[in-house]
Length: 441
Image 1 (cartoon, rainbow, N blue to C red):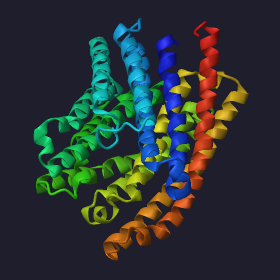
Image 2 (cartoon, rainbow, N blue to C red):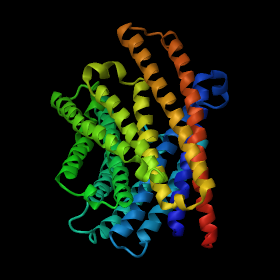
Image 3 (cartoon, rainbow, N blue to C red):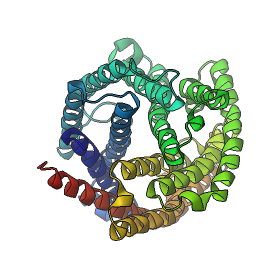
Image 4 (cartoon, helix red, strand yellow):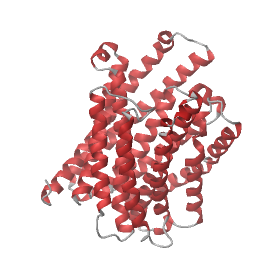
């Protein structure tokens, strides 16, 4: 493993640990106001969100850049990739320095000073240059995971630029115009990094099974097209509450319902995985991929209900939206990325003690995550019912029973921190031992 990849993977794991720890502090500050006076929630929340966001993006790009060298028969690590990693790390570290001094700006999910968006864009341009140059050496016809990586890398740049359109005065002249573009771009951006992450999951399935047919054929490309359509249009359910054109809602709703095709195929695939579980169960990477598939199942059910306008009226802006985000971020994306890093680090060759430690962390995380997820859904249902159906406007009265439910969320967060923290620390130990053995300091 090169120095650049060591830095890339190591920084991603540090971001994961930071997101978990700061997230727990933010939950404590929110639920216990006396503590919040010392650790302001308004400062902890953007730190947690940015750490989680950067963990997902950094982990996704680490996998794509590493695996595509093998797929594209690229012997050397291009200079543009090294420059991307260094600029990306330096800029995102700067984000947290600004947060520490309570310097904010930007918009939702990107709440750091807007000028830092310039080096982030430059870093992604370097990534695009490196990737698209390598792409010319792709196998022909290219397997599906290559197209997923490609659409993810390209669309992330497009959605990031769209997310920053508020710098143009015309967009700021109308609050509705600006918020609609923000909600749209943030929703589509999730689809962009999902393309990178799901492409990596597909690549790992091919490597584990030895069956290249998994990533080829009309059926898998049909599903990719549906996923790509989801990336470009399914953000519509994010803006149901905005007075936009009716056709946007109708297209988004239609695509959401088309996702039932995915849903049914996931059920069939999950049953097949259960039937052959013993075949690959000894592989840590495979265990993480199976865990992510279960959370795809659960989170897709939640997303489909959220995309129904009559239901969205009650769920929009409640803890159910947070449950959907956390179910995706932890249950799906993080599990796939931990599986990817397990493959990168050759965890199954690190000895029984190390593997047992990682599996213990995974079991703890998969106990805490349902606690966290279902408690958020319960809190969201309660808040939505009291605010919409009962018409409560007094915030303290509205939130009193909701905060009691969120104590379960806090307990689940502690267990998730212990579990994922154990995995991240185990991986970092393996990464550092490998770096020392190769003379990387």
